[in-house]
Amino acid sequence: MVSDELWSLIEPLLSVPGRKLASGGPWVPDRQALCGILFVLHTGIQGECLPQELGFGSGMTCWRRLAAWNEAGVWDQQHVVLLEKLRSADKLDWFPGGDRRRPRQVTRRGPTSDPAISCWVVERTISWLHSFRRLRIRWEPGDDIHEAFLDLATCLITHRHVQRLGQGHLEPVFEPALRSAAAPPT
Image 1 (tube, rainbow, N blue to C red):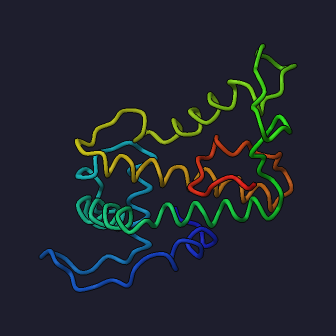
Image 2 (cartoon, rainbow, N blue to C red; image 1 turned 90 degrees about the vertical axis):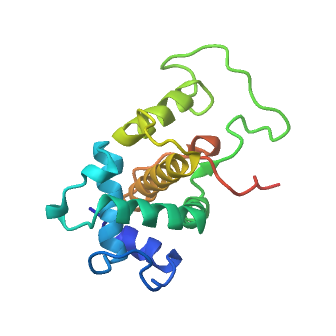
């Protein structure tokens, strides 16, 4: 489930595995745990229902890794790396109206309006996030795991844009739709 390209971007951000704190089976490699996390994110199943036959480790292992990686800021760092790739290719537009002092007013919606400044940007982004079934209904009682799933989904969406950039099929993306941690250029 995790492509070699995506793994090469994520792996350097992960901490070196320490001693196992919980008793149980052998240490599950990070890539397999990430595959389990992505399986839960895409299918929407509960973590404890993660099938052991898939080799991703237990749902609790994946949940602990997701929480640890989120606390370490892995997804925010990953998102910044991916946004830098888009910025270096000049494919992000912080100010779609061209005027950096004031945003443009949107007066109409439809195929003739500029999609970068219309409500379509918001609708499109919500649609991208809803492609991850785990985000459709919030099952987690705490904010941290839901935020981790949301940040991971945002990284995956941005990675898709970077991949399309490599194929030459990417139009400029309006920055707020991808929620950057960095401040806009001045």
